[in-house]
Image (tube, rainbow, N blue to C red; front, side):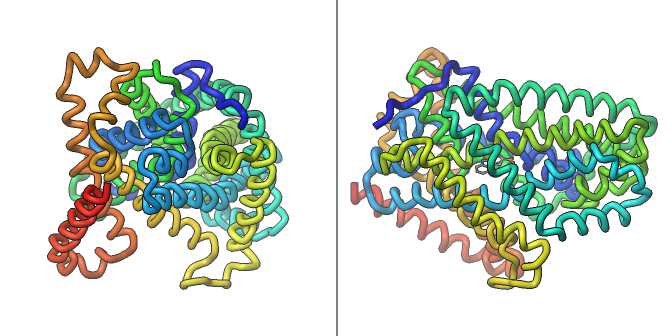
Length: 481
Ligand code: TRP
């Protein structure tokens, strides 16, 4: 077997993991869901979810990876060996395939929009109707959409092919500072536009009336997606860490960077959107429909547009490599493949599975499976089933199944002094993992498979039953050990 690579430094790991976390979720999704759910009030709830659930689960994933030095399947195999838990790891690898296959399609649009911006295509956009028609025409063109999807997939393969140090770590060390720099420029551009303060007010003055049970669930679901939790991506990155690294501090820094970038993206986008008199609640189309109009109205707009879509592409690329790395690590560790072969073979397979997702916007628009297009199915399966399911089981595994004495020994490696000084941290972490995270994730999970929407009342009463079932399951697993 090839010798396992390790991150060159803790800083390299933090940049790579922050690169995984910071992606389309931060720059495309966070601003529009915050916009739709009451701005500051939503941001507040989101921050609580990140701190109370995201951070503990992130620590759990990284710890499982570092302890076992394996991909998700190998990690569960080493720590438990029970077929059930190995299956949980396999679902992570499958989720990697599925998410990557549609993520590259959206990331491809972003590369396409860099090219459109360079060509000056946005300069004639007078209102969002024109720009959305333009967008529809682009994604309606099979060559355009499949071409950029392929290009982005090749870029992803290229980085992962070069390995952990020379590819992912080095790539993140180059791309993350550029990303940060571009975002700062765009924030300065945004907040210095006349009328930008309306955008900032929108983002910072809480409208508590817009907060509903639904928005709390959206905040929690997004907290998971944005930190790349629930499928072993962070576990895999953790598996290239060595024992001297301080996991709690690394996790805190990753979460901090991810949140910072999401907030800065919100500032850059909303200050410009308000200053240019556009609709902040445009939803998913905010970036591809509304922003080109904003750029058209700005002096030097084409340059800002190029910078913005470059930012989005880099963010997506550092996330996509973490998804491909999960798949590759599995084949390298468990099936003894050579990294290069695994990258080429599975990179191409992901590229092919992504093609029907790309075609879902044109020739396969009307082809529905289970009432949805291929793209929507892939997104739904990953975001609403595989990720919350994976997150739930990871929290249960580390909270309940993995012997806590052993967990403690592993966690303390590299961070002895923290736990000696503040034992409360470790107690709190365990309580969150054992109770708060599983219950909250379960709520999100049931919600996202639509069980809660129509029959909220009814399901609320069946909560007791569900919780009882879960505790019985946990007991069964514990006794089997
Ligand atoms: N976190 C990334 C984003 O915000 C997406 C992502 C990358 C991801 N790897 C993941 C999400 C693993 C879930 C699991 O866009």
